[in-house]
Amino acid sequence: MAGKLIVTLKRGLAGKNEIHKATVRALGLRKPGQSHELPDNPAVRGMIEKVKHLVEVREA
Image (cartoon, rainbow, N blue to C red; front, top):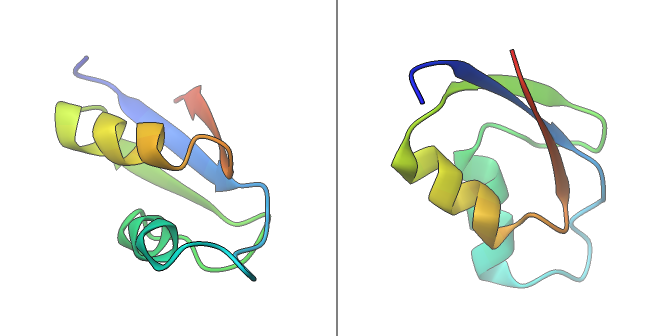
């Protein structure tokens, strides 16, 4: 788990739960199609799990 993850926002946030919006913002994403490289750790994995229906994840 010591690598990096590339997280891409695949769906817009309009009409979504405020907690999901805040989680996506905490992942560093704002617009659909935007990607961000994050460390692969349990905290980031937990945030991704919460919004897995909105994002796409791949290993860097």
